[in-house]
Each structure stands twice: as structure tokens, then as C-alpha cells.
Amino acid sequence: MDFLASVVAWFADPAHWRGEDGIPTRLFEHVQLSGAAVAIAAAIALPLGLYLGHTGRGGFVAINVANLGRALPSLALIALGLVASIALGLGLGFWPTLFALVPLALPPILTNTFVAVRAVDRDTIEAARGMGLRETQILREVELPLALPLILGGMRTAAVNVVATATLGALVAGGALGRYIVDGLALQEYDRLFAGALLVAVLAIATELAFGIPAGRSRYSGSVAE
Image (cartoon, rainbow, N blue to C red; front, side):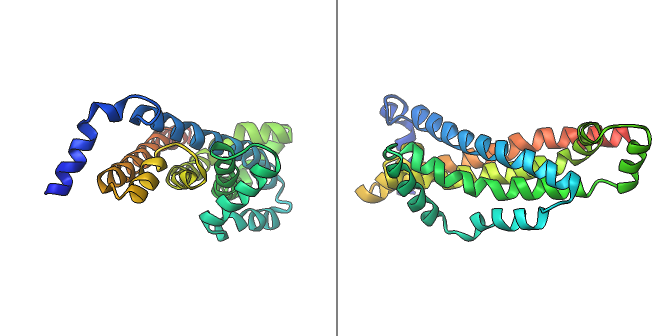
């Protein structure tokens, strides 16, 4: 009970809600970092996954290469990101963490996009070709709408993974919510540590729910269209 009271007191302290180390600032840093990583990964994986899924060429190789990001431990990705950032003269903090998070976000987006497009009924695609639609039209007007729920599922998985892993950025002098966890552990301020972990958990749940809403709408639209 004393520990829970100390956590509540930590959240109730006005000093923790303002300044560079305040909760709003750290939350914004976390969302900014996570959003940038997912956006970059999506910019790479979505076009590639759509192309491979539509043509069926090289999908197995591309997905297995992308899945190497899942095989590497998160700390190893952070270390590689740190080396790359220093080599490019970008320093510590945001950039090495971003370099580490993008490979983490790529596999679920690429895999889900490829699988979703390949899962579209071939008879439907052949019917679209028979109607005179070009390949780009088939992809845009037939395959993409039907594949959208599964694609959004991959985006959701990537976003939740990134939100959870972005906390490790504090190990390379990054900000975000991981700062509370690392500093709390270093200073043995366990109320700060627990508060940071709780904030990350809440943000991960909010991310899960945020991606669930458009996925549900797309499934509903698909059922109506059918």
C-alpha cells in the first residue's frame, strides 16, 4: 500500500507535469519517436508488400529478409543504431533509437501486406481483368480494399511493438517515457520507474485501440460491399 501511495503521489506532484522532464513532454517525445519509426517502416513496407503480393514474385525471399529484424534482440538493434548514428554524425538520443525501431516495425507490415494481397480470391481478380481493368486499377480498387483489415493489423502490431521498445532509447541518452524507467532504476526511485512503465503500458493499449477502430470499420465496409 505504501508503494502504491508513493506512485499516486508521484503522479500528483505538479512538478512532474511541467518542464522538459514533465509527463506531457516525455509523452510527446515517445509518440513522436514511435510515429516516425512506424511511418518510415510503412513507407518502405507497404509499397513493397503491395507489389510483391500483387505479382507474387520474390515474396518469400523479401519476407524472410525482413524477418531478420525479429530475430535480432532489441538491445542489439539499439547498439547497431547507435553505431550508425555516430558514424553519420547524428549523435545520441533520437536518431540511434529511430534507426533501431524501423527494422523492428518492418516485418509485421511487410508480411501482413503481402499475405493480405495474396489472400484475395483469384477468381475476383480474374473477373476484374476480364472487365478490362489495368493491373494498377486491380490493385487499387479490388485487392487493396479487401486486404485493408489485415494490413491494418500489421500496422497495429508494428506500432505496439515500437511503442514498447522505444523505452530502450533512454539507454542511449534518449528522452521519451523510457527516461523515467532508466532514471528510476539508476536512482532507485521505484515510484518513478513504475510510473514510467505504467505510462508506456497505457500508451501501448491506446495505440492498440486506435488501430482497432479503422480496422473494424474496414471489415464492416467490406461485409456491406459483399
